[in-house]
Image 1: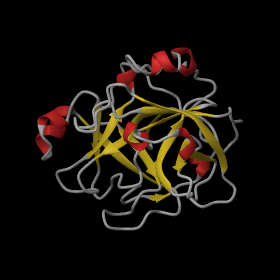
Image 2: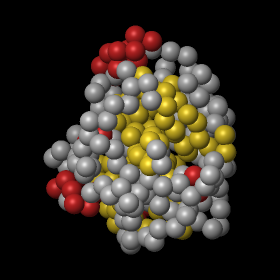
Image 3: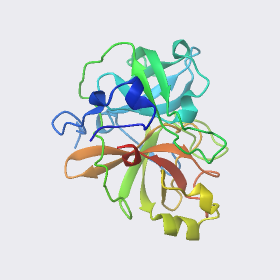
Image 4: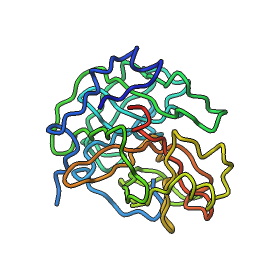
Length: 255
């Protein structure tokens, strides 16, 4: 499949850039997160940190090709490319071993509206140069358009806070959460019906969630030995708060 943003990215970047290839994505090179455990970069070589010019890591993203990164639109809203750099290949947020690359373009979905329940909360980052793959830098695959994720266990990773009032994590964390149907998400949560729309995934697990600082990061699904990016950390109420599952932008919705 190709990652297509109707009326937006397909015209700016070209859909041929995002062609899925099963032989060069989604591999692990190892046998925010609330309630998470430390994660090796070898297990998540597609995760990318977004830093500003003061070296503060403010969001995350997912490598999908040697030049493009998927993130949340709200992470790059009102930002200029020269003010953002990407950090790849490390699990510690302040590691001196990171590969840092300048940004050429920040591409928001043209329909993104922060005041409309974060619909279309997805964007692309084009790096200034193509990067070489290794055991710590490798892209995730893109999912088929018709993938069914209901009740699937997926993995969310990031450097976000370990609780709503806590500190940002120094080491990459990951948690497993379960994807809920839209009906179950509406019925089991206190979200308004309009907030649980077709462009999102709703997922939860007791005491586990993404949190502040995890925005833009990956929700991935492992099927057999292949890892696919199925969601992007978008928003939520609190962190692992009862009656408020995490909300993620569905990547397959843009295929």
